[in-house]
Length: 220
Image 1: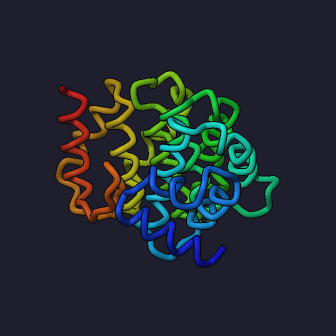
Image 2: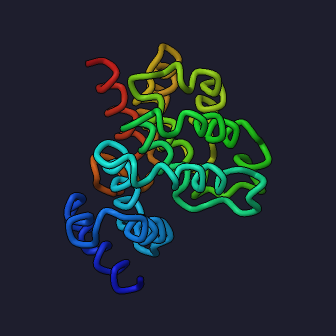
C-alpha cells in the first residue's frame, strides 16, 4: 500500500485525477490509499486528495459511497478524534454530488456551532479551517444549505487568527448575502496572511486580497 500511496501522491501533484483509477484500478483498495493521503504531511497532497474525492463524487460515486459514512463518523464527537480532511472531503463531495452527503451536512454545521470545538482554548485550528472551507463549498450556489450557521460564520471574520478570518472571508464569498458583503468590506485592509486552497492550488494570500476577491465574485 505504501508504494501505491506514493504513486497516487505523484499523480495528485500533477492533477491527474482520472489516471489514478486508470493506473491503480477502480476499486476500494485505491480509495483506501487515497483516504490515507488526507493525513499526508505535504499540505498540497492532502488538498489534492480532497479534490480527488470530489472528482470521484462526480464521476464514480459508487466507489466512495461507502467512505462517506466513515468521513461523517470521523467528524462526529463520538468518534473520539476528529478525522483530518474529513470536513473538506464532505464539502467537496457535497459540492459535486450533494446526494452522497445530504445526511452529513448537519454534522459539519454542528461542528462550527459548538463553542467547545471551534473556540479557544480547546479548538483545533486546522479542523476549523477545514470546516470553514467546507461550508463555502456546500453553500456556494446553494446558501440555504448553510443558512442556519451564517451568524456563527460571520463572527469568524473577527477572529484573532488571520487564517480563520481569511477562510471565513473566502467562505462568505462563496455563499453570499447582504451581511456577507458588509463583513467582507471590513476585511479589505486586513494585513493578515493565510494559506488558502482554491482552484486546485494552495497559495499564501493576504486576508485583504481574499476579501477583495470575494466581493468581486459576489458583485459579478
